[in-house]
Structure formats: structure tokens, C-alpha cells
Image (spheres, rainbow, N blue to C red):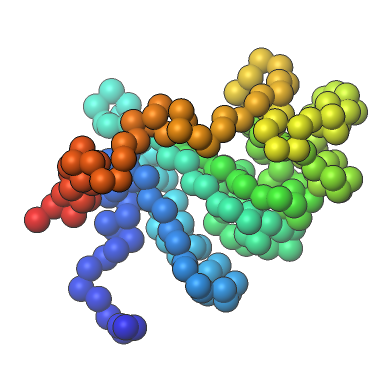
Length: 215
């Protein structure tokens, strides 16, 4: 049911969760209207941006006596919708990509068509994880500003399309191809996943519910 007014500042609650180091996922369900999607995400992220800028400035003014803001990573899927050349400079996500590292915020962008993303934003990406690409424009976009791009393009073209990815940038001393893990029983065991009917899983679920929504 739609409401014209609510008595709770949900964005404030979201920021509180982030400050506590909790992950927050925004899911818009069946809402496919891009304008509505852009409006909501920009409003929410602008509030987060403002909060982190204020916190960083307070900390930088007196780092010995003020708490350091908790590092934040903002992830956006279908990134070209927010960062295509015609709108990147107008959205808060473009600002975050260019400026926010000094305020303890980084941006993780996920997209299958990197050629649709503004080149200035692509040049700011410190670490890139790339699976096999077939379109020449997308391949050129991924290696924007990267030295040895021609050699890396050859490496990319020879990768396994399902279980390999190329990592390059700040996170690794040199470009390296990795093999992704299988989503099998061993993977879930490593995450301490237990059978859905077990008392242990029910107990963990109850603890998490009480943690997020304390009475």
C-alpha cells in the first residue's frame, strides 16, 4: 500500500546500518521504470554522500580525537544506466567514481557492456575484474588507460568463458588470470552453510533477525 507520509526516516536507518558495517541491498522488485529507479537511487546515494563527506571532514580536522569513518563500497549493477557519457557528470555516481576515495568511499561497478560507461569514469577504476568479452568496443573500454593492452587483449580472448577472469590494477602486482569457484556443496560448506531443516540454521536466522530488528 502506498503512503504519502511515514513517521520513520528509512534512509537514516540505512546510513546507521552502513556505519555499523552492515551490508545493505536495495532491490526494486518489479519496478522497471528507469526514471523512478534513477530518482530513488540518486536521492538515497546523495544522502550517503553528504554524510560521509561531513564525517571525513570532521575526522581530517582532528584525526587523533575523532573516529575514522568506516570504509564504504557502493556497488551498482547495470552501471551504464547510471554512468553513460550523457549523464555521468549529472549523477552522484559519477561524483563518487571521481572524488570519493578521499572520503573513505569507493565505487564497484558491474556491467556486461563497459563500452556504455563514460570513459572518464572508466579511467578512475583502480582494479578491474574482466570475464570473456566478444565485442571489440567493450574490450577497448575495459583496457582504457592500461599499459600493455594489446597483450592483455590476447590473454582475454583465450580465457575459459565460464570459469576464468582477468584481474588487473591496484589489487594485484601484475595482471593475472584466476579460476572462479564452483557453487557446489564444498563451496557452501566453506560458508558454514547447514541444512535448511537443522536447528543450527534456524538459530542463526533468529539471531540475525534480532540483530537487524531488535525489539
